[in-house]
Length: 117
Length: 113
Image 1 (cartoon, helix red, strand yellow):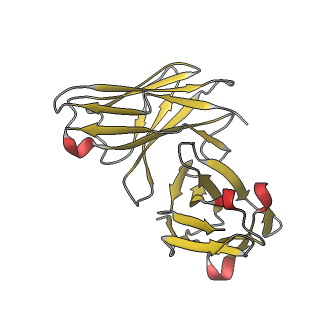
Image 2: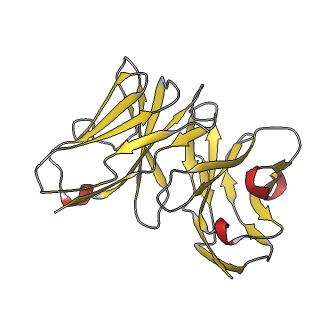
């Protein structure tokens, strides 16, 4: 199957700093990528849809200025958590379909564990 | 609004035993239904999906699921569980209108030898 990587796998930062998470499709081009947030013992919550060459589409309640998404190429989308606070601590996961949208088979990254002190 | 419920947070079975993980959905039209598995340190992997047609769907790793419209359910089954099946299982529902997936809260499967 297709491979999606995320980097870093875990990061610890101080409150007020910004953290960038990368999501790469290693063996296919992804015009669309999805960013999810997963709280302990809870489901994956869609944060935003990242579209190559255009602005991301954010879900209701997600702060666009706090969670900056850039999909600069067909293989890379980045999520930057700006001015991170402890409540931003979570598990962030990206996914991409080889073709099509969310209803096609998604290939998920292994996730990034963010801890904000 | 779409929603997915996985009633069982944690299930423990013995290796070789049969397995059924429950999933109930809420959606006005015919849903697109998925089961994904999340193993430790790995990304979610698609086990199977249902869009239309035969309500019994075969997936990878010996899993199957049955769509029951009358019960709004899409339960995942496996006749004989292997230790390597220990993981977190997520049911998801999708809509062609929103092109988004709504995930359930997951069921953690533990397998005893």
